[in-house]
Length: 295
Image (cartoon, rainbow, N blue to C red; front, side):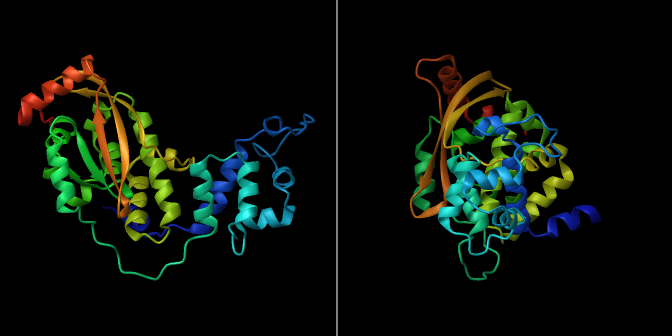
């Protein structure tokens, strides 16, 4: 890694800067007519609402809102954050992200966390799901455990170094995954939005800061998407995949929180019954190790 990359990966995430940039980005996407304010046609120096307009909508003073947008969330109340979230028309995920940035949960200084361990019972559960791809992810998009069908669909994660088993690195740094996901751009957006949520919840996570820094240096697409400050949580949906053996097909997915560990998620892919995609999934299951793509 060159000196520029080393500097980027060692730079911690600045919670105050994150708060400031997030509020600015949400304000910039609103127009006066979006929120029922008159627009007198005057040329605006900045996109979106002015600070005065946003403060008026939220029912706070301009000076108070300005301090908050400058990253000073000290002593801000939940009620004020709720008002600002309503004025900015934030989604539930964006509202939660704003709260995490402005009022971070108190925590003790801890040494860097080890890679989470997946309970043996959960590993047995994954192995028993032999007809559908399933895996467990942790913070920072880490892939912690998976079953045989996940290997057949996504590649041999077991052959990767543990630090490389993250969706963020695979999607942005491995060209093969651009071919695997038909809508690669949407997959990339989902990854970045999830990392943004983690950054709000865990601003002192050194490994997360290192991952963001590394990707910012190595991927222009990541830098572009990271700069949008978009956040969301996606627990279900549909992905179109292009597998080297069975071609293009669609799978739905469901994400479930693992009881007892809020950082772990069980992700299960499935096909619509009696569909062409279900037949493709059945073929992958019957081929077993022969179906593993070269990634």
